[in-house]
Length: 309
View 1: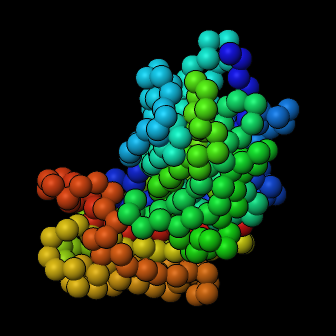
View 2: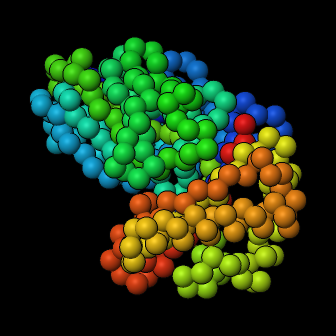
């Protein structure tokens, strides 16, 4: 059966995420690419192939489900690659099926216009609910794709100063028939996507301290220069810790570290006070499991998020 495409760095220790809206003025980055939307048009992604989901977190087959060859969730990762001549390279969710994916070399944020694009194959988009999460545990519903709608704007549902790494698709049981029950997904894109540049928290602070090391100052001044070059930038400094110690202590430490970075950007980097916001998340958003000393070091981080738009 011939089916047509319709429509859709993890920071090791800390990340700078730059969000660029699709319709922003100025020169586009070299990675910018256009992808067919399956209805005769195109979707423009400024980060190109970096915009797509990178990791399957979980998949629950629906009932009824498709054949095993169409029940492989890894087929939704990366850029769209469906080939209607061989009818493969996609996932059928099954009736009521659920897929959770993670963005690791990018992140999802709120920019002007659509923020999410789901590449679903077939003659019609089967109704599917979409939710996003910062930590993979607490979810925010942002809408549904159905009919000819495959793009979603998260504004109103998402906090403008938050970024999201997880996305969940749940089939709404509107197409529970045939060989391909439920939605058929080829790829998932974060339109409001950003690349990550890692900053090592160990280079910023001594152990269990929130006073910046002198060695961190050049890096943060360079960061401030980038921020000041973007007139419409909104900046969030997010502190994170590993899982050692009490929840209260980790929360306090993460807040103090985020505030220290924010203060430096404002006082020494010349960033406007009302542009930069600081938040601490303690141990609640680990980048990796807190099961080895190396992983714990990776979770001790400060993320500076620059959202343009």
